[in-house]
Image 1: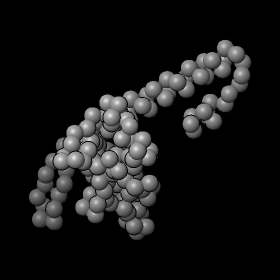
Image 2 (image 1 turned 90 degrees about the vertical axis):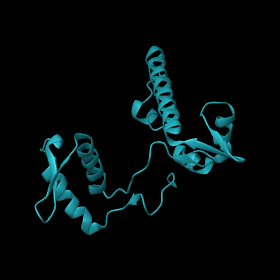
Image 3 (image 1 turned 30 degrees about the horizontal axis):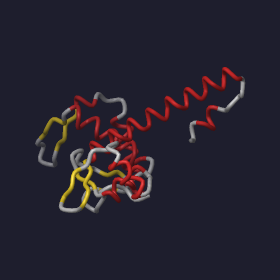
Image 4 (image 1 turned 180 degrees about the horizontal axis):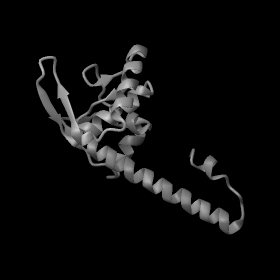
Length: 157
């Protein structure tokens, strides 16, 4: 799957060698209070790392220790319809239908539709919540009728 608005500037994939170093860093950071982190250069100058940046660092390091690529994106970034469709893992024509039905806000730049990443993520959050609720309803119906559906199999849907 192609990721959204990813380019060489904001995509970071660790090498096998880096994963080992990153794993050591995670072991070092894991028991620490991330609100008490400092960055120090070779000349002894120190700068406090804010709690938010500390949390972000831990999340990034955790992902990279698993060999996952990490992308840093602006929450207000504008996406093309193809980028948005890729992020939702749907076809571009299906995404266009969602846009035209008003399920996801968009605006036009000339003749092209653009979607803010924040709006797309909000739609995805709503969609995933609705799916969870439907799954739970199906499980309750299963219990009512003693159909014995396996919840782990349903969660893959």
